[in-house]
Length: 469
Ligand SMILES: Cc1ncc(COP(=O)(O)O)c(C=O)c1O
Ligand SMILES: N[C@@H](CCOP(=O)(O)O)C(=O)O
Image (cartoon, rainbow, N blue to C red; front, top):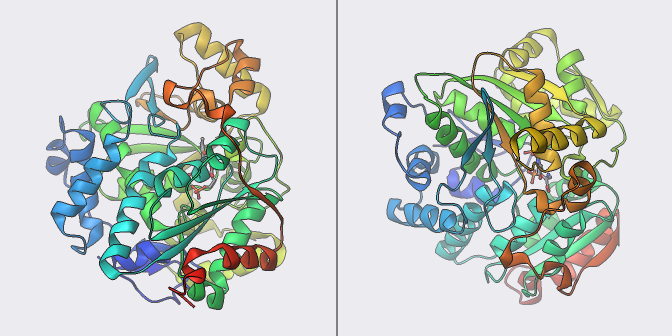
């Protein structure tokens, strides 16, 4: 199994190198050269297996045999043993034909744990095998940061630097990131929005001198190994609802387009998915793009679903690569247009291909609050604002196929918005009960690439100890 960049000008890599690379050296995103496929009989044979066993079957082809199988299986079992629900990602019914896929039973109460718990183990393993260290940089609108810090804290082959937008994450999300006492964790509050943080991270990867000097690695969904583990829960959810003998649709609260792209991968692997619906908040660039073909950035607006306050949606590039028949030159032209003018237009043929696979919808803040209230009243089920956006949009797209809505975060991460909508203040689970009393430790930095790079260089243990120059 080899991995190619969406921009076609970076080296083709094996799994371990793609894992450590994060962003490709040409600024593109890695994708498998071809997707492994499962026949209906092979999918049927996954019925009744545990989450970890399905993960082993679905994910093994992606490693290309580079990780010894027994080690890979151990890492998968260890990763999912950190989840507080026996099913790992259980399904709950919230309507006649509507199901919520709870992805928030991991250590930081968001779907990011599903990938991050495995990614950290894989990176640590590969670095140890090679006798190397890495400096991890990541941008977060609230959840990736907490999940990454939890997964990498105390690992001595990595320093981790997480950039979050100053004053734009929920208090619980902030405390999850800033209360780590591990020496390898560095939390940076950037004076900007999530797109600024993401641009800084990409800027560091594209600064090849800095990248090589610090052995940079990434934990955002620009890293293929962040998308890969998320493919598994599409399989487990669809299997529970009758796959491969019954097609199932999914609605996915969407920001960086990573989670829904994992659904697309599952479909390409042979899972019979009927429709994939992207649900956005007021930062609705993906909804607008699917409507008009014009991908046009506007200012990020702050909403009650802060993790989705994103305009530049990184993984859309992977979809563009697919929709253009893997023509990297076409992707480069679109990305150049975006850099120069903040927009590009998808041509008619690729747009039709995208529309054949994806639908989209939007939920405004009042609509999201109303769904939280009405689902609680009708079903006694408390949604977080991100998951509520999914339910709202799913209901706008209801038809005969079972619809699975991805519930991407626990309501206790956003107590204010949930209480305002429902009158109920959700409580953190016992193991996080004292979270808001824990001491915070973070550095505020301006939105300036040079200043952020200098800060990281000064604080990276790899540089201080002379492990990398
Ligand atoms: C709670 C929550 N829901 C939805 C999303 C959107 O996921 P994606 O960026 O993979 O589209 C995010 C973050 O990205 C999130 O943290
Ligand atoms: N919503 C995310 C934003 C970063 O997305 P990623 O999936 O690319 O890591 C967050 O909560 O940080």
